[in-house]
Structures are given as C-alpha cells and as structure tokens.
Length: 256
Image (cartoon, rainbow, N blue to C red; front, side, top):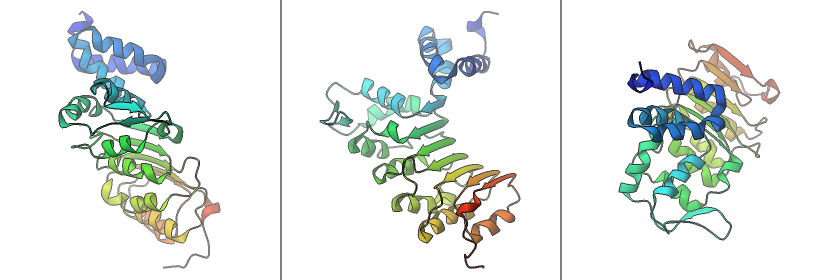
C-alpha cells in the first residue's frame, strides 16, 4: 500500500517515531515540509509538529506571520510587541495550531523577547490559549508573566513542573495562583515543585494548600511542604512515588 493511502492514525505513529529518532529540533523542518507535501500528510504532520513545544517561539512566529504588516513590531528594547489587539478572525486562524499543543516547556530566557502587550494579548484570547495542554513545565517567577501562567493552567493539565527559574522564591502573585491549583487543575497526576526551601510561612502555606487540593496525584517531587501536606499525602491512595527534600522541612512546625 502506498504511504499516502495509509489511515491518519498510522501516519501519526510514523511521524511520531521520526520525531523521537531525530529530536524536536532535527525533525521540525522535515515535519513542516511533510505538512506542505499533500493533504493526506498535512493534519498528521501538523499534529506531531505542534504536539510538544519548547518555548513560545513557534506560537509567536505563527502569530507574526499571520497578522497584517505593521500590527506586530519590535520595540526600542528589541522585544516583540503589538500595535493593536488581535482580532477574533486572527485568533481563529491561530487556534488551528494551538489546539494541537499537548505539552509546553518555558524558561526565563524564552520569555525575555516578549513585552507586556504580547502577554496581555495572549491572556485575552477569546478561548483557552492552549485548550488541549496536558503537560506544562514553567521555569520563571516574574510577576508580569504570572497572568500568562494563569491562562495556561486549566482542567486538562495532568503533568506540571514549577520552579522560579533564576529566583529561589515564588512571587506573591504566583503563590496566590498556586493556592488555587487544586481547583484549576484537579486532574494533575505528576507534580514537581522546587523552590530551594522557601522561608516564608505564608508562601509555604499557599503551596501546601495546592498539594492538599490534588486528589489524583501519582507522582510528587517537592521541597515545599508542611505537616498538613504530609498528612494529606500519607492518606492519598493514588500516590505511587514521593520525593521530598527534607532539608526544607521545619521539624518545629506545629502539629495538627
């Protein structure tokens, strides 16, 4: 049977194997070429191409490429900005790609080229920015990007990695967001949260509030916890793997 006659599910599997063999960077150009080759290849190749993103650059490049000339620009600091809001018809085009994203990894350096107008536009999208996002790895703690993190955290998330990037302590805005994690992302099954031993009782309580709200955890790695969180984890039937950095634990915490 000619490869063009194969069902989409088989093509997805073939393209996924190719990506595993050549890595994200090595396979992106080939997958993009496959998506332009024929209608049969287009959807499966785009699905694999957008499935796992390392940074927001692919999304921003798609945004800039589609917007009319003059809407996007570089400001005086050389960071990407917008001269007007993104219109609904423009979002409808971008959503053809964002709905394919299943995992996203973001580091501080990858957010540096983005100014506040881009953040405001992304968090103001008329529908969830990445509606099928399942895995998020976020390594930044600057308050101006917390709204973007908030927009990404939703009920589809099952795997989450958090730390402060270059900062060892979460900002107040991020801690407030984390306190609601159990409600925002009730289906989290894998969580990594490291902050080099937070010494603020209020911040620790906020993060532990999130831990106590997660009922489906299978795997947890963290250095932020208190007695209440430990009790919750001890009686959590779903938990299969637990890694705690004990140096961060204060044995003088009041007992319940």
